Image 1 (cartoon, rainbow, N blue to C red):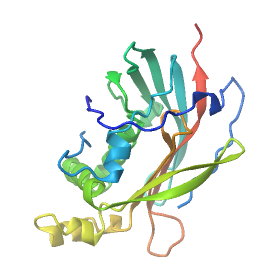
Image 2 (cartoon, one colour; image 1 turned 90 degrees about the vertical axis):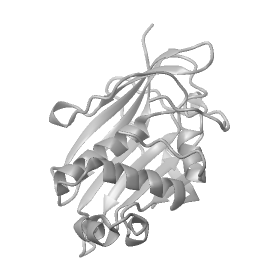
Image 3 (cartoon, rainbow, N blue to C red; image 1 turned 60 degrees about the vertical axis):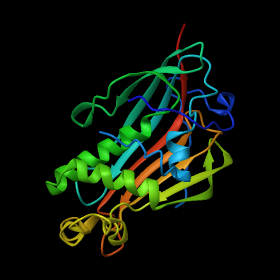
Length: 250
């Protein structure tokens, strides 16, 4: 999980994040509307934000980043759970040693720890979980789904200004929006007509990464939603939302 960070952005401000204490709740409104490394010959704005940004820059002590994970939709079982990203150590270089707890019980996925990193790998964990769900639902090849997401981020993504409400305040950020399984996106793949027919239910699936330098870890929300034909309850919906931080006891 080693990735080179070749760009920097404004530091995030750890002090603006609510500290979660036992029994406390943090209000967070939804944002409006393997291998995921990028090809350095085609660095899109989306890839710069995801892969070339120091998401953890302002974190100066061991903390836990806490996220809510919610799954709903016609396909699969709905549930609410939590995701933790543990900043275990801050190195003299400013890089971090991190570990994960991605969901619990039967839904738990084990991801390896990462040392000496600047990226918040929660977005990769979210995507890998999403890929595994699509693989289960279709019997398809996980590599195909991973590659479609990676290539779409590199060449067929949108980055737009966004605002979102968090902890009683309105913040500004960026939305990365991508539809990796649209007919246009899949058309670049050899044998695309057959592939599109097999996975056409995901044609409208939309991923939105809501990022802001006001949120420790860089990500306020990540969502992947597949609309249904009737426009009511989605076929699939997975939403990861930042709740706040827990300061580790010394």
